[in-house]
Length: 184
Image 1: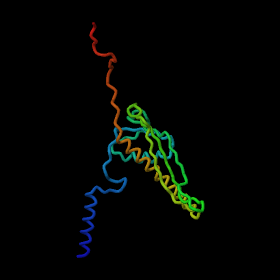
Image 2: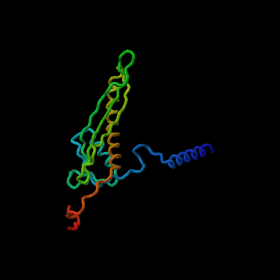
Image 3: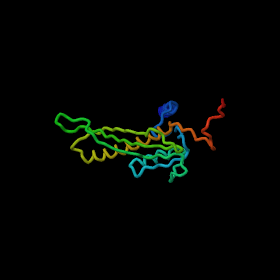
Image 4: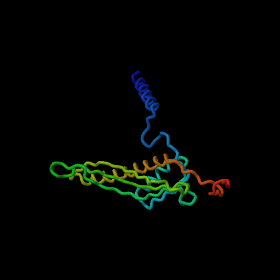
């Protein structure tokens, strides 16, 4: 009796969570479609390239191309930088905490029209520090940098989804002259 009551409560809890729209980060939920169907990623060997490719691969109606020819959009990683700044110092003058800042700037050219301004994603992480745990802190720092790049890539793709596509150039030859002007 108690076991069946537990299963019923667990099932009810799961139904309540699913009814409120709960889902783990990166899983489920609705993905807003991008305003283009094909994309060429030009990253130039930057560290964020693999994370951008992973996030873009989750887009169901997007084709990642190997060449810019034929792509509706070209996404270029213009710059990426990371900095490690001292955040707090204890009374003995030793570092207690660092702030890790990762910045990625990308430029999108959509249907031959550059989308201005360039998009910049900034991710900050704080990291406690202790001289007693130097090796462990180096590994933790690498994990934080990896997480920051992944988060920046997700931010960039979310922002791409909310861009408005530029108006297409009119087909055929259009005259720049005004319509018939009455002669006096």
